[in-house]
Amino acid sequence: MAGPAHDYHRGDMDISEQKSTYALFTALAKWGSLFTATVLLFLTVCFAVGAGFIPAAIAAGVLLVGGWWYLRKKPFTEH
Image 1 (spheres, rainbow, N blue to C red):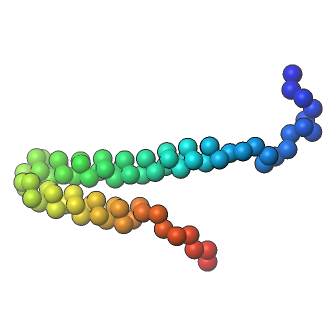
Image 2 (spheres, rainbow, N blue to C red):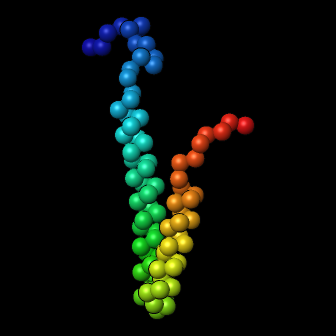
Image 3 (cartoon, one colour):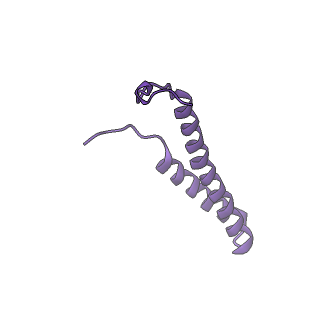
């Protein structure tokens, strides 16, 4: 059985590993989603629309650069 309730002290546990795991997960999800969207756009424009390789590469490049600009780490500023 657990010890007395007064032995628990909120905020005493080291959570640095949980923080780094969460940061890794969110980064992989963010950049993986951008990569997946870019590949899907390229393949759709190239094959489904039939526009060809160059227009598909341009569209995918625009999405990749725009996504990188939007998703990059920005400095936190408090208003």
